[in-house]
Amino acid sequence: MNKLLLFMMIIILLISMISMLIMIVSKKSIIDLQKSTPFECGFNPMSYKRLPFSIHFFLIAVIFLIFDIEIIIIIPMIFTLKSSMLMYWLITSTMFVLILILGLFHEWYNGMLNWTI
Image (cartoon, rainbow, N blue to C red; front, top):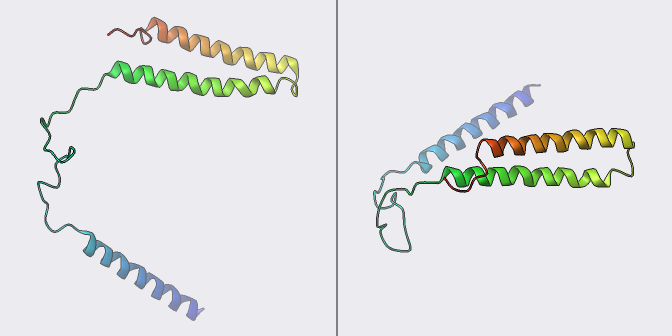
């Protein structure tokens, strides 16, 4: 038992020494302004402003990903038709497709599918 305690203390001591050494070595001593600026193909950037990001494009991308994942969920449902009970399969498939259609109508009525802003 004493050997186990001794080994644990040595391991904890080694880990703490290595951690302290890493913290000391990894700190940057000089913060260089030139190194912290963006680099564009060897030239200084023309402007430092960030371009505005279209939130409408982001919404269209998210909607595409959601419906893409839903298609991935629907395809195995077709393959499980042979191995499942028809009534349970119809109820599950109908509910899932109904939820998808309701989500599509909700996005349509909120104007998320209109490409113009």
